[in-house]
Image (cartoon, rainbow over all chains, first blue to last red; front, top):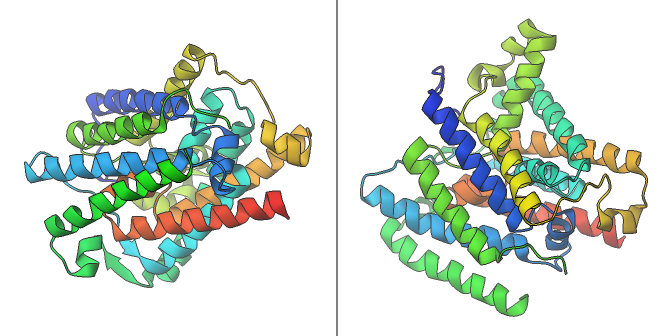
Length: 185
Length: 167
């Protein structure tokens, strides 16, 4: 998503992007989640490192972002719900994930740690992005129009207040994390 | 089992804190896949500028080097620093697990990786994000589209991995 259309990012933003990227890449490598064996191990359901990293990041980030927002320090960037495209694209993405064994982020990290097969994956990502752009006019007037609900959030769907939802959902995620830690240490 | 150098809970916690920092300092969520699309657009501009500029997607998502592209360049550097510092530079064309299942043929691995990458990117654009943009940033904002996408990512990846390795 482009949050500042047309406007070029300031030098400060570009430097921040680079700095945040260095930290993100460093962390993903240290977490081991850019290793083909760890990623495929997650999908073969014999290594739960990826879910542990993601779920922990989601819980910490969720508490952090909604706290900062309550203080008026950040604004949300919720992606629009387009049910048909979210599902079809999500399933395609999963197939690609199983075939490549890296995701877009861990692919670049895999290259950084010397997994050169990621180069072919990255070239594929560039090609696939362009193929999508070729078809974007058609997709935009067909599948991406189905189930278009805008930037809705889980509490909206359930009809509960955000605070109430968080009080229930965060402990649920933490319990899930504890169960995974117990069952797949 | 092959472990990461650091605990997954520590890494997850630090990624959560990093998310807070990108929202606060850059007013942006962590997201990766759009950067590949912008780079693809820049390459398209080199080869067929008029055609690329006419595509709907590139009119909405300008091919340019911006925050997200810098993020991805930084990730390459950060991963390299982490791997060197931990003595984990692999220098391999074929992953060990792949070789056990499909053999050491480099061309086969690269060909399949290219196809996988293409499906991955098309899926990410259609779904509106990837493991970072939907899976972490969107999920932590309670975005409905992101939780739907995340469930689909995992379901299809689990099915694909089992087809490839257990059939």
